Image (cartoon, rainbow, N blue to C red; front, top):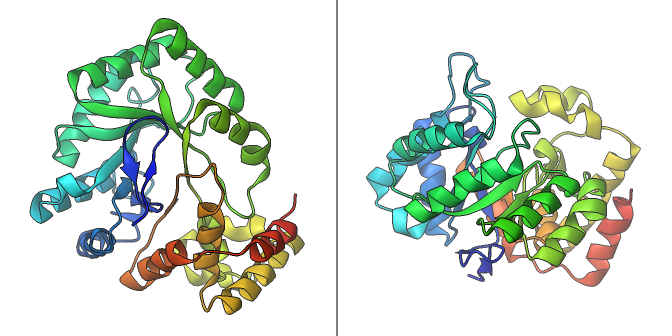
Length: 316
């Protein structure tokens, strides 16, 4: 399995990350264990979650995904085989959100406990906190790295200006810098990443792990009409993709998938993996069959003609 370094962190990962957002939501505990087992058995290692997953589910309070992963780590004995990435900052309760130093130091202990581990490999700011100085956030992370509770840090949902400022402060003050960025990026959602974030990531050597890599499932080809939106819980978020450009992308995906005897999901991931700035796309699965689809995408080597066809169909 080809490994790629995550930024300049010294952490090497296989080119596909498993999204933990579905654990405790659309994948119950036994199903989550099966998916995690199969992911590692296939030679993959990066598992991405967040403290807030899956707080949005009625009856959940957040931490469900980390808890499931922690139980799986304990029962499988696979801790040394995987890279655990989690996040802090999204709201867990009225006084439990943001990126202040006291909150980060408190939240990390809760995540470590749920994950049943001593160290988080990649600890990420879930979203920018404009009310907290970047110095304060980076100082907190540097303290955690010094203590051995965190190996490297990353940012998610940061704009170009803020990620640049954070990198500058780290360099000036000797803090540990962000080694990865987690942006929304896929064949449909291209503009923001390619125009403003990608140049910074290349210049600063920041690793990129994309979320919404399959556009909430739209790029699997499962949703091709308004009626299809009722096929799953996530179908409600698909409406924005049901337009001429979206259908044009699906048509190109079908064409390339047929050429490679693959699936639209596999081709979508292969397109991401082929982009030099991308370290590993994140994608989630709720069944072994779905996971196999994702894994197939890592085995595809798209030729330039296929990449050009997909680029043209998804031009913005």
